Every structure is written in structure tokens, then in C-alpha cells.
Length: 149
Image 1 (cartoon, rainbow, N blue to C red):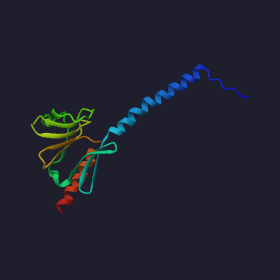
Image 2: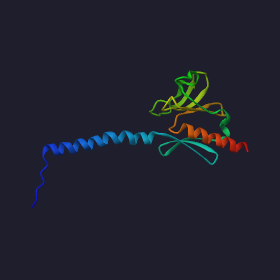
Image 3: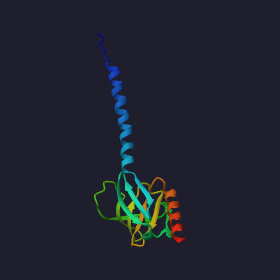
Image 4: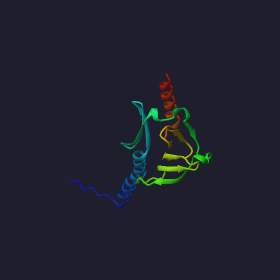
């Protein structure tokens, strides 16, 4: 019969490795669940968080000729000023806001240095920062040129 005996240093090292991997992995996993993603398909812009679709807009309701990337640290008129209603999202920056220039905006901001400004024909603007802002801007411009043909 073989007895396995763990000395206290081995058990402590295993515990430290296990807890360290959890501490490094959980925030990354939660970040992936909370990341804002956009999809363009079937003439719709879908804004999703995790597996749930938060909002979807027909491309015809977006003013695709006036979309642009901005840095809110240098463009104070486009910064959110006052939260209009509290829909229950725990992260600040995802809600309806009044901008400093007086416009209403549906805001999905995680990085204020790379924000996509999308005016709509519905009386509000969409401000969003996604990981691939430049790629999304190019996709929206291609969709606009596809509508113009």
C-alpha cells in the first residue's frame, strides 16, 4: 500500500497556483461577457452584450453619411453630460444620456478615446466604443454605398 503525503509547502504552492489562475481568469471571462459587440446583417445593426441583443436598428434609420470616429477627450461637445434614465445597467456609460451639445444619445462607451458617432433619423445619436471601431465604421460605409447603388 502506498501512502501519499503532501507536505505543507506543496499544498500551499498548489493553492496559490489555483487561486492565482482564478484571479487572472475570472476578470477576463467577465470582460468577455460584458463586451459590446456589433453585428451588421439583414440590413440591421445589432448591438449585443454577451449573448443578448440589447438594441437593433434598421440601417435605413441610421444617417450613414455622417458617421465618424471621435475622441471624447478632445471633443467635449459630444461627451455625455446627464443620464436621462437609469435602465439598470451596472456599468456606467451604457444608457440614454444628454450630450453636452444638447442632443440625446444612446451610449455604449467603454473607451472614450475611440468612439463611433452614429446619428440616426429617429432624433437621437448612437455613441459606442467597440474593439473594432475602425472595422465597424468601414462596414457601415460599405453598407451605405450598397444602399446608394
